[in-house]
Image (cartoon, rainbow, N blue to C red; front, side, top):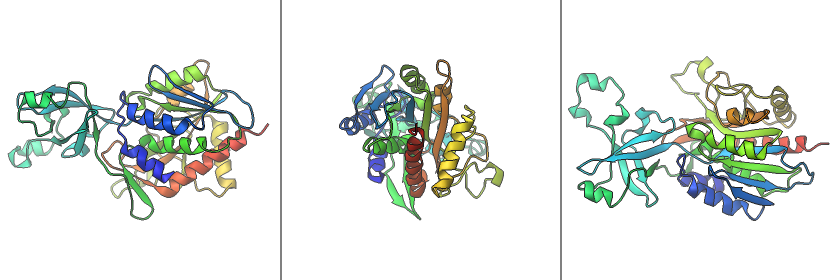
Length: 340
């Protein structure tokens, strides 16, 4: 699964432009799928029969998209003005390398040098309108030959293992969920499962609503990442969760109150099988669950997440052990649901 995760994090798939990721997932899923299709919003829906015929009762969900940028203007001198796609902290973007468009034109997010700013400017975070992307073009005509308005841009970060069992990459949110689902697709399943690789989660869980509406499951398990704030300058009660303490089983976040019975089932399975687990110690964030849960007459929804530091940044960090335990717990959840 680690090699798959590295490949997935190397791909670019900013919200609304998930084609590269969807093609990879479709090619990997096709040999194992009973059937699959992409819908109008760009979700990849994969159905696989299991030992017990349950139809569309269970849906596993992970989103394909990542945060990034979109080109909005080209200046006379060939610099690119842009806006962010998804929730990006401007503080972490300055000076970071990006690639623009399907031709992956290299650029860097620039800002007026510190030597040229006033003391007041040094005290504030620059607005997005004051940032630009330098692609090395000599003028607007040269830039227009390389990029166009509406082109997407992705951060650049080589996926790698490092430190004490950690993994660094862009877009771990939510390529780890996609990697877990691909791994399960390769296995014999105890029951029928619909796998929804969703689009546009980072801009409002848009794809999840469409996929849940078409699948109409009774139960959904969202495989995600969540904010690990186990950092030196964060008070204990605001640390949310921490790397290495196991998958995060959520009871509530900023968008969803999760099905209590499913929460208790996941907790029981973790404890019975000696899988370390944690839950959020601070209510924050949200994911595809909020859209899925409210679809049609409602869907019983649970979430299992990997704790990840620096979400929505050019580089994020997670625990390899947490990733493997996320897979183990999801597998046990399928086996438990399959019991008559």
